[in-house]
Image (cartoon, rainbow, N blue to C red; front, side, top):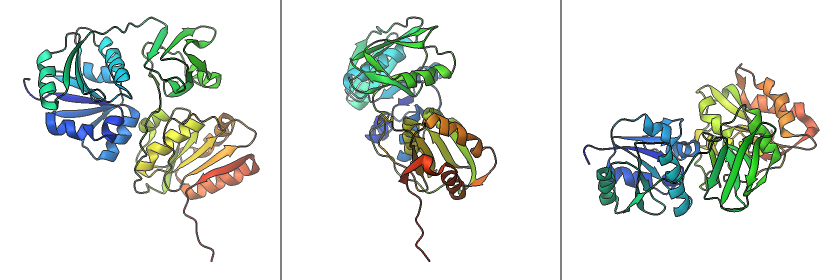
Amino acid sequence: MTGRPVMVVHGPEIFDSGEVRWLIGRIRPTRTIVAGVMARTAAEESCIPVEFWCEPPSSVIRRIPGTVFLANHGKSAESGQIFGDIVASRLPGRGLVQVECSSRTVFVWGGAPRALASALSHLTGFTLKEAVSTYRMVPGERTIRGCIPGEPVYVNGLIIGRATADTVVLRTTERLGIEPVSGIIPKVHGIDKVVRQGNIDLTTAWCKSGPIRSALPKEGERAVRTGRVIVIDHCGHEIYQRVKPDCCGVLSIGDDTTAVCGHICTHRGIPVLGIVDGDRDTIVSEAFPSGSVVMHTLSERDDDIGAELAPMAGEHPVVWDEWVELVIRTLGDRVRVVVDTRVKREPG
């Protein structure tokens, strides 16, 4: 191996397990770049100095000259290899070296430099394995492999159904936008939300299955108490692009969006006001930072109440605790508070 390589890291499990720290100690990469939303959350909690790129791993790797490899920890050995296959298919002519911690394997995909793979295998003690990408993109269609029946299936961070087989097939149509072909019980409401985002290219969309993260987040210090409230409407994966230093809280709309926002914001100490209607799919462990409130709608959809509240957030600074009280008074008996982590004041 000539020179030290760049390590691109995907997924939170590899941080939560301590493997990133171990890999850095063994390989000493020149840079460690994180791709993925929950991977960023886990990385921030680990306090390991890394770079954050809001791009898929294949896009990151294409932009880096010289020696680079992907480090991953799939939910299973099979899903880890499937993920590497997909990334390698998007790097034609370059190939991919993948350090897969779930199976303790260094994969050499396509025309990737074998010298790099051999050096990584030696440094980690992982098995070296040649692999050929079999993943083929079909225009207007997407195959999601490595699913476990019963787990949620996502397109661009939104749940569109639950897997019924190890392979889910989707296609785009003019009539429906996204049509479930096989291996999935569709969640029509979720598909509608994806379609409302605009034209979806399934070949490049972020698609996955399973929980986003299994570990609980670590709570950080409370952020600013006066500032802007940002609105996250059924797109929890966008939160890092939206949160700025002057953010004092998040209005999250949707059950799973509220769960994701609460999980991410716990470490940053940013409270969440969540509007939910009871269709949560349990994609992350529930956690909310101090100052958070979650309200369950009693007879309306979270979308409708969320749309009503969004203008109250606006662009002007507010005092978070006062703003939350205003929202609670405004909604009155239309909602029921199901989570309240605000500090209770003793009478008198």
